[in-house]
Length: 215
Ligand code: AMP
Picture 1 (cartoon, rainbow, N blue to C red):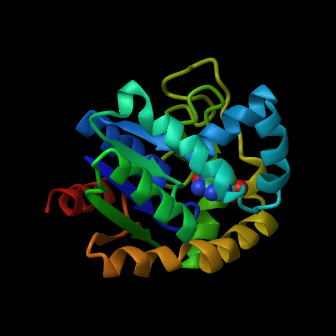
Picture 2 (cartoon, rainbow, N blue to C red; picture 1 turned 45 degrees about the vertical axis):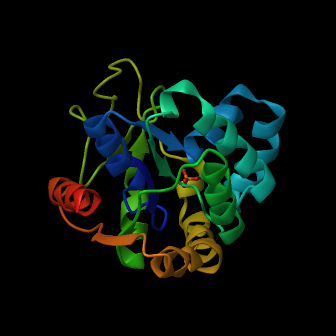
């Protein structure tokens, strides 16, 4: 199963993607997490990417396409993957189709998770992540057991992302509307799009997502 999760920042792609990937025994490929790892390691890519990410801008297409090309060729991605955060532009979507076609593969389904802007802003401002495994928690909808540490890494204190400030969130939503939202039609006309409401309790979204992927 090769699947793309599409949707605005904070709609739950990371959380739902992680659950879905685990249930289906597929790897979750999150380009945001890959970049945050590079930032933490201060690689040349990380240093450049940080400047763009902190302001809510996108990292250039050719860099992202190269990263995803390499990542999808690794052993654990051979039976399929769940992509979270890629593609984010039409050139990235075309490149993804092309890189899969080179290997006689194609995407099985693209799921659009949607939620109104107010809900997105509310969620992002209450979002916390584990610095070790990057698992995402939400103080309102999906808190950690003790509210402070990761359930899977009891020594790791949860922290907020630098780009989850109100100003950067507004910018990221604008970037989503301008550069990523066109992918909805891109995949719809190709007959690959399924839509799932990202609002509501985690388990109902999870069930709706599973149904969309199965059907
Ligand atoms: P995310 O965790 O998916 O919200 O991504 C965090 C940030 O990483 C984004 O705001 C972008 O700056 C950058 N980023 C992640 N994925 C991509 C992508 N496919 N193309 C360009 N920039 C990306």
